[in-house]
Length: 284
Image 1 (tube, rainbow, N blue to C red):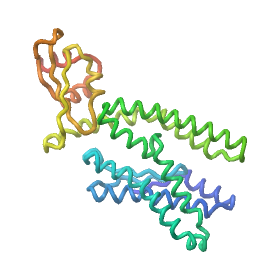
Image 2: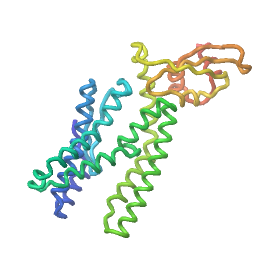
Image 3: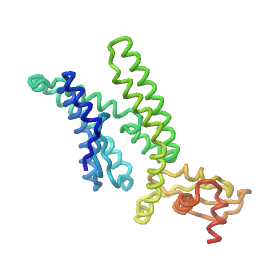
Image 4: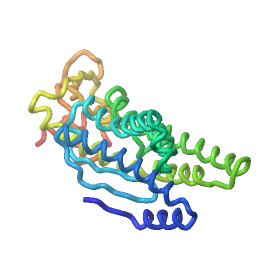
């Protein structure tokens, strides 16, 4: 399903009125090929595209069942977009005379800039998604999400500062400033979406666990260990097996896996300790 936002048509009209219709076509072509690369690689791995959303800020493909892919396959899907832009830039540079003859000599440059820009660690760009994936498996998904948001906000502030410098010293062009501000707002508002994405991915682990697709990561914790810290230790592509010991660290009380914890916290909240969960599980 393709959804075109009104802002796209407004941007197209503004560019056309300014006599920059060819520039707009080159930029939107580079963005479209970028998203098509994501879609093609995802389809090759058995994932379906739910929606392709097109707006003045670009295009975003919503792809289903990405959490069921291995980390390297997900990396391939995410990296396919920038890789497509870099490949196009290289091919255009090798055939520059042809593109000059049709008035599209800047098409390679726009692809290069788009590829580099998408690797910035700012949501919803590909760089942030790669950081979220690999650091999420190393640090824990929720911790990685928080760090990605902070890093993204810092990058947005830098973009806005560079936009102000550009407008003052070089030309009255506020594109970089507006892009930085828009991405900053998205990063500030994305926490709820990322939290929902996290819990959905954790609940969907049961299917992968039954097929033996998840390696085990052991965790030893005292009974008074907060459930919130357990949840923060959960990664995208491993399963926590928690050995619960008493406060003297001498007696093993229970061994549980993260699926039991995630089912509990999605129903009753993240507050409490492992001891609270054990009391609940014994009384039911």
